[in-house]
Image 1 (cartoon, rainbow, N blue to C red):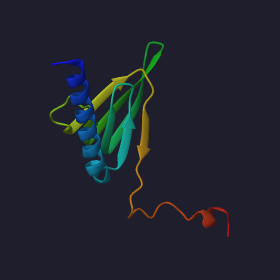
Image 2 (cartoon, helix red, strand yellow):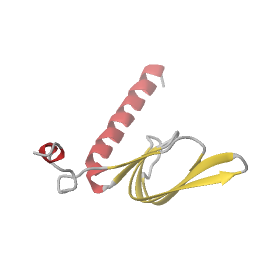
Image 3 (cartoon, rainbow, N blue to C red):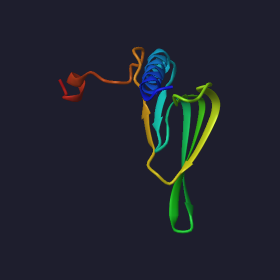
Length: 109
């Protein structure tokens, strides 16, 4: 296999992963980013822990999808991540979500 063949394979795999993400993102409520992975999940629990003088994060997710081009099964029932690095958790907005107010309401009009 040439380096060009390998590059083409990786490009196709990444494109397939993006398409899968686009197809499933509407099924999930949260986006979770860690230093190693990107997840979609329906339930997320973040716990801040201390050990000695260090602080670390324990993130538990239920019904998750993992952005990883090399995983054969990206849908997982439960995920637990322990990390000393930053964790970013965002709640996704959906078309049927009425929690986002109109900008005119925010301005008091």
